[in-house]
Length: 103
Image: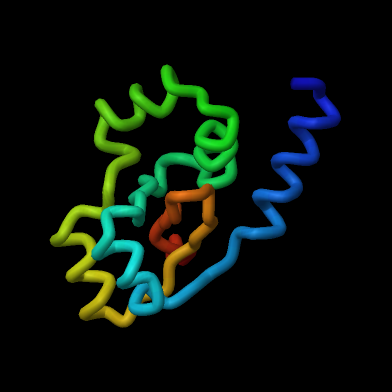
């Protein structure tokens, strides 16, 4: 992939990333398509690795529990807190990340 193509992919991911109420993503959670991304990672970088099928990096994040299907307990907390999350669709997945509280 050329640098221009990589830039275009990243720009597309950024354009499709937004905040959304976790409750609006319940269908994707129920079908196992909601993927948790740790706040230690950059959501755009993770999405880019999914798009580019960079299995080695994604598998490393999964082994480190930084990327995984949204755990039931996390989903429950977000639901009960009426949380807003960052989300981006990388078909068939919806990558979600907790919105960081800057204080």
